[in-house]
Image (cartoon, rainbow, N blue to C red):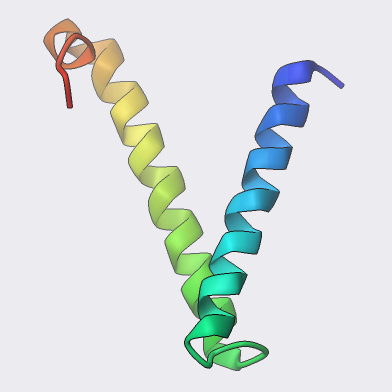
Amino acid sequence: MYVVELEFRNKTKDLIDSLKSICANYGLGNDGNEFKIITQTFLYKFLNDKFAFEAKKVDKSVASAES
């Protein structure tokens, strides 16, 4: 595997682990809603990052913006 793929996989696992930890801290550990929260949060982050990546390709002023 490539180093980038391994790094992405490790960051993804860390994100899921931190979301599981947050759910457990607020009493949602091993609950059916825990899966929904983790899935929705993960998908939101993925889609948000994907949108930002594509927007930067279309408009170069977005790529040079601070935030």
